Image (cartoon, rainbow, N blue to C red):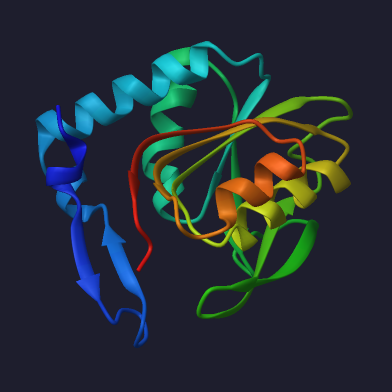
Length: 175
């Protein structure tokens, strides 16, 4: 299946100069959504990990399926002030602003291997922040799986240069 046909591109969103790759058109198509999840699960089976983590919010859509099918605990990496217990926090830069993500301090145990899943890798700021959260929690990043890699933006290469393994299902230019 050509998943690219199921991704909508929206120019100048959320700000001028950004070409937003929208997965809502993929997830509203049952066949494309199932195919995407099946491919992510197959990639995940090739990685040695203890828990799956997802970056808010679109990463939740895909990581929950991996968690369910592979019987692995699911960790939420959320925006600032969305988690009720004690958290680790990381501030980071986005292509279009600044943000903070957090994880509960009790979500990751020492030396646990964490697989991170998100819908898209662009500049890498969010993914790098997720890795830092996992590491300050005592865990190790087992790898990343993305639905989309924006290949002409630096995110995927940034992660690889830092020693992280990455996988993606499809590639698009970022601009």
